[in-house]
Image (cartoon, rainbow, N blue to C red; front, side, top):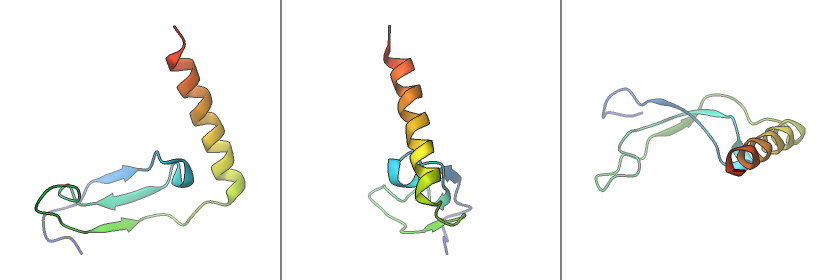
Length: 66
């Protein structure tokens, strides 16, 4: 439980957990760390993650092309 306030909802952009929602304290990475972290949704099956990663890579490639 986070005692620092209401932690913001975030969405993962890391390939292995792409698109998963979680709560993380705003001070999670600060010097005065709060270690609150909680996944909201269950892990996706590998097929869904693969599709999300593929879409992410396509979008990334589109955005990096001049």
